[in-house]
Length: 490
Ligand code: GLN
Image (cartoon, rainbow, N blue to C red):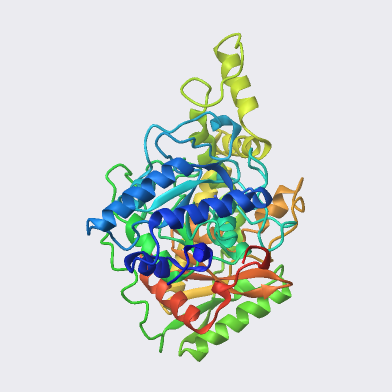
């Protein structure tokens, strides 16, 4: 009999089996998670809101559902949601003072689908304000610390979700990825994360940052677990006009397919200047592992990769400046005290409600979209975006997937990027291109450099999440980086 107190070391697949076998109840699992959060999250700050009462009530419902014989594979398993997903009746802050008082009147599709599967929501995780950042330091609710070294950042923007998983507070968490916000924190925290193809997962109820790039996804310990979660959240949603009306395959059906003969593209552009030597060595070792599993490594080129940072940092702020115009102090969110008139209400509410990074991006975006500069910046960035997408299309003519590092370094120290936004933007150099092209990508734990985790990035063709999960799962059968936990939280 397995003790529910070791919940934090178990995968979803194991918890699912344990619940089915009656080794523990959902209420026991949920209590175990809540007590770990209570004991240890003071050090990490991964949660903005913990919904203990709701969680215990949902766990009870899940146990009743199991007793009635109608439990599914995820029923009764606790998880945490990035605080960018609307949750009915629960504060949904997006990491901002602007929404500190916002209680969502409805659930995001991702949230309601996981609830229908019987999962138990533990609470809402911390993030960079409006998902803008790579360190989690821009959150109004304070920085999140990396469980592997609390002097370091967990990555961003979904840093709270990745850190909560790494610290064993929850066996699964949701995230969103506009330019790397699932993959980079997964890499920095040593967990597995998947950003699906744009359109695979509904954006309904996911607070918009840059709508043409934003995509919801998940974090878990293993690729298999990610597949289980993805199965529940994927698929067309009439409430999101950009959600893809594309058949949802059995994501985990091919996990054990042999990799023999699979071609993995290795882009030269991913291994150039700026890549830390130790990170590079670990990625090369991971690639050799794929060779040992029968894959063929093929050199490919993505000649416009180097333009992804400038293109992204025009497109994303442009869309953000438009999306964030809804926060005006009138309909919801922060409102300044005693406005003199309407203009004063708008100006002061926004000046008080948004943090520096968000303001910086609104200004850049508004500038790029202004009549005089639209052609020079926004239009040009959109053209580059097309070239980047074409690079991938061409590369995928000769390979099944592409692999490389997620980030050029391991997690940096808190404060290391303060005052240098451009340096922070450069940390997204390997992740942004996928969002610009709409492709699916994963981060898979691939070792440690100086005690900090390093993620291998796997990139698939549009809608080939199943192929990516197969690649990641096979790697995780041969390595055990994904099952390591930081000593302080083991
Ligand atoms: N770090 C990138 C940014 O700040 C990506 C963030 C994200 O994916 N949400 O825009």
